[in-house]
Amino acid sequence: PTFDVLPAPPKAQLFGAPVEIPFNLTGLTAFTVADVDLAIGFYNENGSGFVGADVADTLVKLELVAPDNTSAILWDRNNSSPAYVAADYVYIDGAATPVSYLNLNDTGTPPLGPNLLSSFNGHPGQGTWKLRVFGTSGGNVVVPLQAKLSISKAP
Image (cartoon, rainbow, N blue to C red):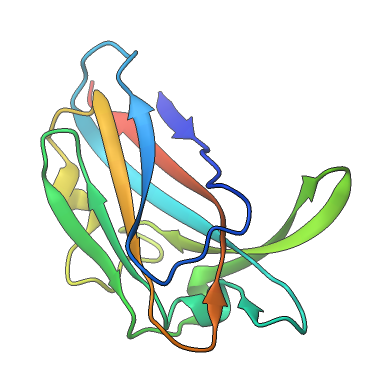
């Protein structure tokens, strides 16, 4: 089975400093990680300086931390690859809102970190995972809309 967690940071939370997005898996039975995928969506706002994943991928650094404190830098502000970005819409207050996702998985769109998501394979999965997002200072505002951590457990 795969566990999908979709926390949404507070609306308009800006990434000028490190922000931590928790994925609380403490209520699950203990398990060992077999595979991890990560997607983070960024709000697209035309004309007001907000940026989507197609630009955010050059502005942010992503670090994932497992419950046992295993840590991996998965993205490091130096990338711009359209293959990694998917456009979609989410509904906020009944209105369709454009969002673009930076999708990371080791087989199709591997992190350009220096680390891979497979760094977590074989580690305990139960507990609180943390996605740390480090932004840049400057004119562009990177606004996360949601993050999705998919974890497959080992048999």
